[in-house]
Image (cartoon, rainbow, N blue to C red; front, side, top):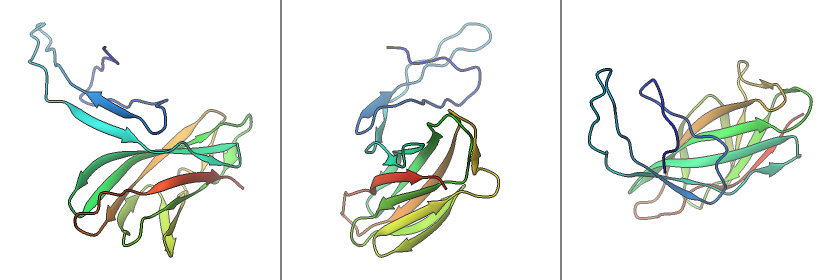
Length: 156
């Protein structure tokens, strides 16, 4: 099934279901109409659906994994309310032994195994239906296959 076409070399798939694995293949077409072979399949798995105050929701996708780490990107923060929000906080659980290696588009702090992501000065205001994203790289004990989970979002 064709999901989309894009006039650029990138694509963002939004509105995905929680706890679902998606598989993608790419076929390119140049200006002359020549079509490439189909690429290898890439998979992305969304994590549990976001909960919180009902106005703000967070969903996450594990983009890449390796033996001792993984990248969660995007974590999409969405304003589900009817008025703009000015600020958001996303909490999520890190399995035992997992630590944040780096992050982008959010300030992240940890307390025990709870990580808290807060908006930056440039991405905290979201119009109704609006969204923003951030990402996290996590270190984990070698051989552990668990990933962060239990995303909740709140807005002041």
